[in-house]
Every structure is written in structure tokens, then in C-alpha cells.
Amino acid sequence: MLLLVAVCSVDCWLLVCCESLISIEVFGLSAQAQEHHAELIERLAVPFPLLSDETLAFQAALKLPTFDAGGAPFLKRLTLFVRDGRIAHAFYPVARPAEHAREVLDWLDEKRRAIAKG
Image (tube, rainbow, N blue to C red):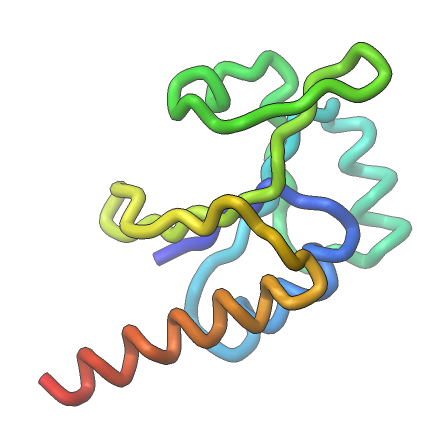
């Protein structure tokens, strides 16, 4: 299982708890160049990989939402829960970024409890 997150710096810090509390792989995704990621990873000590979709190929294939800023396209904030190679759940739009990690963790916990009940 993995979470794929269109990231900003807030998400980097908040969503690390998903990786540490639950055995889920977390990846960040953005339309920015890998060079920007290297700087971001170092500056914020991001503990999970950031994937670059600079050509927007992934965005186009999944029709992920974007916005323009300064003439450059960016991915809108979203979280995809991927299981067995399929998108099992999408969190979009992310209305309250500061609370989004908690929203994801609560959703995962709800699913875990449902499975445990049988």
C-alpha cells in the first residue's frame, strides 16, 4: 500500500506520521524539477521520496487537477491511496491542509478497524 501526495512543505511534515505509524509507503509528487526537490528534501529533511512529474505525463494520464502560478503549472494538493496498483481512494479537494494528515490517518484507522471486525 502507498500514499501518493501532491506535496507542499506542510504536507511533508504532516504526512510523515502515516509512514511511521502504519506500514505504508509515502511518496510526494510535484510538477517541479528534480533539482527543486533536492533542495526541498535537504531544507525540510523530507523523509520520503519526492517524485518529479515535470513533463506532466503522470498528471495527464490520471487527469490530476492543476493550477498555474507565475506561468508554471503545479499540481493541486491531493492524496491518492494506492493498493495493489489501483487507486483505492482519493482525497480531493484538500480543504484544510493543516488538518489533512489527521484526516488521512483517521480514514486509514477506520479501514483498519473495519477489516479487524471482519
